[in-house]
Length: 294
Image: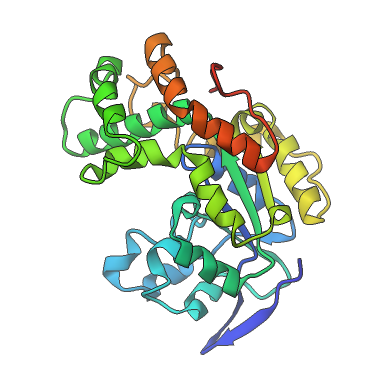
């Protein structure tokens, strides 16, 4: 992976070549942090360049010096020179860790291929049962905290689950928030579109639970896949503050990370055929069907 420089007006930068494409609520912030601990990888300089965007675009593009969201939020609004200006032209590989890329349009996937045909694409995939519940809690409780309303508790999730599943997978269009909970975990639908554009060897796909259990080992597996030397002597404690940034406990003490028996069974049965399709697509199985992950 050898980055190439480009000059755009007063800036000389490089288009990123490494992408964490998903999935949301699956450890992508911690993975991005570990990737950029490597001497040959750099994050986007969002805090430096975001002020050059229109005010109305700044709230959704370039988040935390981690996720640019260029292909989902900005590609039709600002040119690729602005994107390249986020990364130094110093020989390091640029990283864009935008987990909403997983579900972006076919047109956007083709545009990324046009810009970076040899892109390296990392996908951390969490058990969709747990990802569904985590996303539900975050979305509802963040909104309620801002509105100073009582926070959701587990019984609220139980009351709404049947209604949410009754409209899934394709009849939740009028309820976009529910559609997001449901469809993000249908990984086969999304990765099959990516694999029609990029070859399989350009993907590093891992179970998020494996990453949670041993983040440094998984990061080093990714470095080897990229042809880079592994990290040495990285204390696990150095990534824990980052790994907790999107934790449910950060925004409500009522959060419990585990879906309970009856609700877990309903969601597991719903996702079972989609999981099986994913395992066939990537020629690898994860211990999701009937099993609990973090």
